[in-house]
Length: 101
Image (tube, rainbow, N blue to C red; front, top):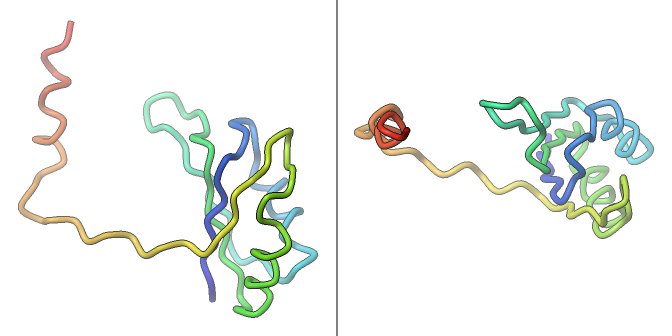
């Protein structure tokens, strides 16, 4: 299974639209649209997982730089997520936000 990054998406893009875009290239396992946790609005990028690595490579080659929703999308293999330091509590990292007026 290969995970694919899709960037420069319009904020109104849906999971169904992305599934339809990638479906001609192979079986799409999952589509994950990344949204802002406060507003729920799309952040302009997503991840697609495809079951067949060769089909995923073909989709990357075919779709990178193509217009989608009025923008040229960026499509490439997703990089692994960096390890987070468990010593840092995410609440403490956002402590400065509590004191804004």
